[in-house]
Image 1 (cartoon, helix red, strand yellow):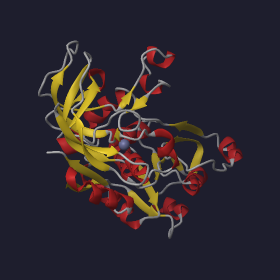
Image 2 (tube, helix red, strand yellow; image 1 turned 30 degrees about the horizontal axis):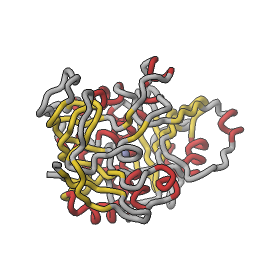
Image 3 (tube, rainbow, N blue to C red; image 1 turned 60 degrees about the vertical axis):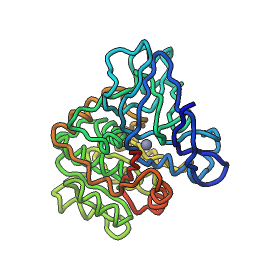
Length: 344
Ligand code: ZN
């Protein structure tokens, strides 16, 4: 049997282990993808750390990873419209086709969704089996390392495009890689001002390098002091909450205009108190965002990348897959943007 290298959650303790695994067999509607580049995600850090969520969710022995770019090397007998040799990324959410949501074309809302690298064998490996339905072909203009971060860029695009941004003042709370990319998307989509907040100066510096945004360190600077500088009269029209921090959401609600709109992607660690009366009296709209719209977000994202959206600087480290431990260490220290592992 042919084998491959794969990063496996082999033990019920912090860490991942590089092991030899059988190359996946594909079904009639699947493709086999030779992986070239993968991105390390916050989700992978939870799995590495083996926290409560990971223990409840991830089966031991799972091949991890869900952010990837590669090349199709084999196809099932019933696959149409793709070719061996096609470079691709792909949607890592494996959806069912029988729910009301799926049958009405809202695939990303299917309640039976399973994730590669979380529930099913993932992309931190030399080969990945994926349903052909999930494949997203890459145009020549999008190289493998950008292809490997389309999953998180897709989260950013989905969140940012939740509301009309043209001419609006946008507040992004949380300057992690997805927050920074959401800020870049908001700018690309025609926002007037994009302000991004965090308490980590290195992340804010990275944000300012990636996009034309106004970084504000809310540990030392008052968000309200920034508004007159930008000739803002009332507050922000659109808020993108990417941090999961209760304090950040609180500041955002405070800083919104009457009738403002907020998209939430950040995940608070547990229940957090919310002053709902302010949300009611400000007539705010709040939307929770999950994953990417399948496949509208992918379409818009690739169109924007082909039309000048540039997020490459959010990739701060590139390492061979064999050096994965170093990559996870850097990520866990919070001292990086996106880290890309090269599978050769
Ligand atoms: Zn991810």
